[in-house]
Amino acid sequence: MAGMFAWGHMGGFWSNQPVRVALVVGGGAALVCAVVGLSTVMRRQAFAGHALADVSGAGGSASFLLGINPLFGFLGMAAAAAGVMEWAQVREARERDLLTGVVLGAGLGLAALLLYLDMTVRNVSGAAITVLFGSMFTIPPSIVPVALTVAAAALGASALVFRPLLVSTLSVDLARAQGASVRTIALIHALALALAVSLAAMTVGAILSTALLIGPAAAALQVARRPATALALAVLIGLAAAWGGIALAYQSYYWTAGHGWPVSFFIVMLIVCAYLVASAAARRRAGSSATAPRSGCQEH
Amino acid sequence: MNAGEAVVALDRVAVTLGERPVLREVSFRLEAEQFCALIGTNGSGKTTLLRAILGFIRVRAGRIDLPAGAIGYVPQKITLDPGLPLRARDVIALGLDGARFGARLPSKARAARVQEMLRAVGAEEFAEQRVGTLSGGQQQRVLLAHALVRRPKLLLLDEPLANLDVGSTAEIVALLRRLSHEFGAAVLLSAHDMNPLLPVVDRIVYLANGCAVSGKADEVVRTEVLSCLYGYHVDVLRVHGRVVVIAAGAGDESRDALERDPVHTITVP
Image (tube, rainbow over all chains, first blue to last red; front, side):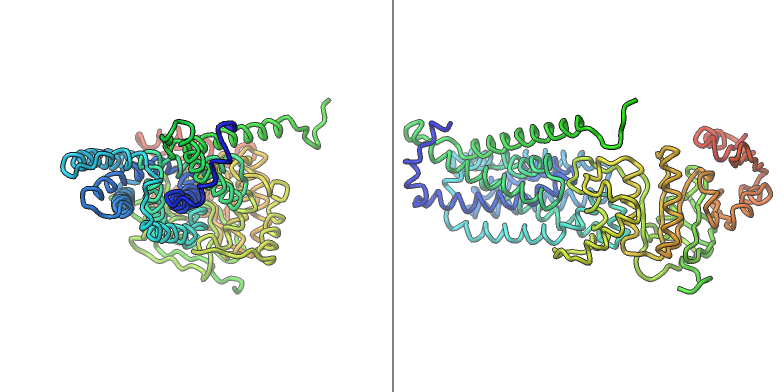
């Protein structure tokens, strides 16, 4: 890959407006997903995150049909699905995964219908690819202020509940005994999750947004021992994957004359690589600590 | 808090879960620094009682008077994920203000408080380790420090000795006894086996049949007292330094109890 990456081609990178928009929106999505994803993975809600991302695709599909900003479409559907899942979990806490699966199925079914209507009624032929796999270089600049506002709201919500979420992750009863409103905390986290997945769906598509949400956090949790370290690592991995993916996609125009490779592919592959490296580092550390001599033990 | 003043007082408390009455008329009081064991067989309502005191469950009748401020709590059977990026030190710090919204700034006073708790529970050696990778006894020490870091007047522990080996059980019991004096906290600890606790407890609250009897161990664990509580004859035996309660109940329920809890309370149909 190093041979394929030509710095000479990067001259127009910074002056290219679609690239600049992609860097801002993609960077914002990566940052938010890393922060929200960390809480999501620690709370073992990766499936819920994946389901919300996929369901948000129905909103993205509807936005083409209605002619509205796609981010609002993704966000509206993700927020509605998060609300339904939280409400359902309160009533049937033991059936969380089952209910999440039902919401996921309903959302995907609706997305299939809306994508069909996009193609047949509105004649938007690329809607399916854009909604499901993203198209970062076609994001209009007018979305940037809205995307940054959504990102700021998600970060604010996450910062608000970060500590109570940690206690609640240890034990819901511990959090309640300390006076935390577990229900409020879960709702705020669900809102932050909806905001994060809608941003991710805008950038890498509804299907691949799980990678941006879960991947950097999962990689960071392999090696970090402190919440702050995990947070910093997840953000670093997420931003590196997003911006690195954009740079590689830009370069790819020169690999296959005039046909760039999808940005989402590079972002997801970089995240997978980061996860594999982190897993190897964690295994190596575990191996070295297991073989280290213990003080105070003597053989007889 | 003055000596003799109740830290927690329950007056004829009744709790119903769904349609099932679990506690019917439970009354007892605890004073500062008292170390009290809440004893009963599995399913006798120990956890329900602790959850009612914490306000997690609404009481159907009666009254619970609690101290102002924090109540320390160590829940039953927490499974701490080894992958959580939380060191023992972090878990204790979360006991200080983990329920509060928003960010906090690091402070020397806060760090000193955490260090003091690490020392108090003997957890300095593993303070930097991920809490999920610690042994059961070490995790109990960390959770105990988490519960005590706000210096509560009342400390509730739900089966903290369950799943501990004999050595760890003795260590945790001795630690709890010492800390209740050092921190001036009343301790209410639930357990289904009273034997490890008998040498150190000030009082026992014995739950059976939805009711409770409380007092000093030698006042409560007696044939006539427990027979009255169970509503039928029971024998209290002392075998090799251990107390065994043999309750002559009736039917399948008693056989189930015998299978569940053969050491502490034996119910013979």
